[in-house]
Image (tube, rainbow, N blue to C red):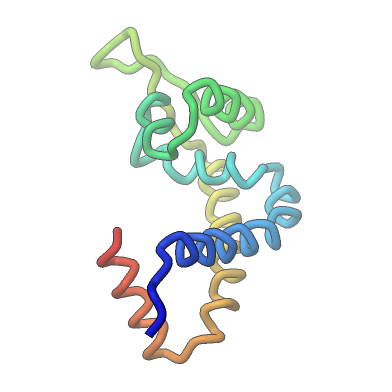
Length: 135
């Protein structure tokens, strides 16, 4: 039996995800978003503060600021002063932002679903269970 190489498993997972993302990037761009902006947008409701968003997405704060400004300019996000702490801005997804995020996630889901379709139902269930265990 050969030794398990964690780096190889990580690399296979990374390559799979990047391949799916690369495949749908042009379609997501058609929505007026870059894929990273989509990821930012989809996390705002759960993490409405820019610093929290940066930590969740493992992105530098200045990078998140750039994405937030672009999303705001496109009408997908609104930045408001937090009523509980006037020093902080709270982000809110607009109805247009919800619509475009749902379309973008559907594109990613369809592309990833095509990859999952290569596995049997039992293998998909096992993969989900293993990923949940690792998360």
